[in-house]
Length: 401
Image (cartoon, rainbow, N blue to C red; front, side, top):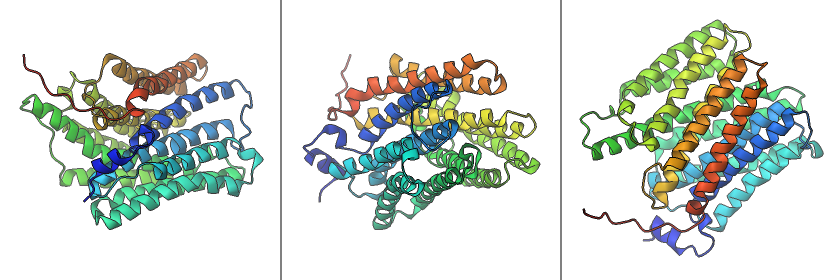
């Protein structure tokens, strides 16, 4: 019976098409840096893209539904074969998925030249194809415990559709229900998937060092925190300005922070590949607190959302891409100084963007945030290009001495 490894080795084309994480992680990082550079030019008032979206809405869309969908695809197309025991998608079928994703980016960029329905159809073709692939694998592999991941992928697709409809009706999609739903789905994905990998990777690393303190295993309390998170996010999507929403978000933030405290993150300072996962996850509860505070501090709302969007989503995806790429490419699971610098650059971007929300007159903060963001993702593309575009290296045998 053919195994995943045998199918990957049987592919004789470009190495970048030998596994899902390779093209999607690389192109996601390139697009994150390029789209931010375009956004900086848009901030000067120049209409450099013939897009039907207003500049802020294009910027938000291309991060939440462009960049994130590519990272999610890279992660799931790599993880699902392990979850289901079925074979991965490699070669030209994988290239076709990448082409669908790229077509969506082009269609949105030139959407002013096309009917809005055609733009939406092209942009949704990729997430719908990804959902179909995931559904087939989960059903064929009878891997029912991962149905919530499929449901969230569908939710992200629905949010994208609502975003397009809002734009077509002349609304402001960056402040609409489509963006809130998409961001809520992203936070739930981090809560669900991050709740698996952060304690798991931490446990493995600490166990290798014979640490007496290990993360607390997943249990009923984790399920309760996830349920509370889902309710708080659902209420926020529907009633973002309600006082009760602020209370629920604050409560969810406390619960998420307590959940994170059980994962022994304070013992991981020696390895950036691990501590960055804890910092990224910490931005989930901090985002809840910021959203709650935004109900009482006028003008803080957009800045609060960036704690989730640029912070939790940006840092967690960068953390996952750096670690997963090393592991699946047969490289040592250790963050070198250049990789660690990527994390600090993105943390600077998040802090600067949040500060810019409270100090709107200090436009230099926006440029600092954009520059640090570009440095983080362009740096990832440069550092990881040889890792993602070349065949997997054989694992090194440990030497004695």
